Image (tube, rainbow, N blue to C red; front, side, top):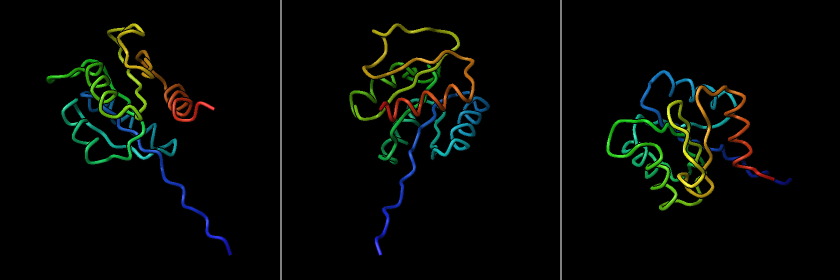
Length: 127
């Protein structure tokens, strides 16, 4: 009898300083079958990435308090972990493609659940 390899869940890190927006993102992604780790700012996000090397995608807001905003966080992640996909959202700024890290994508707020889930699935499995 052949044993099947268990399917490992896809882990997404959601970063937003607004607790209700972050909770909505977490709920939407968990309902879609993702395993979610969350952080309220860039410094916390970098700590979570060290603790969870299995993270495959970071979904971050741009405007956050602290030393790094979401665009700067995405750049640091891209430099340290180019294997991680980056989805960057904002309702206040619209970065140009040149301002995004390579492979990074922008999503304007307000976003809807289907849009976020569909975009993340395409980013993780572009085939």
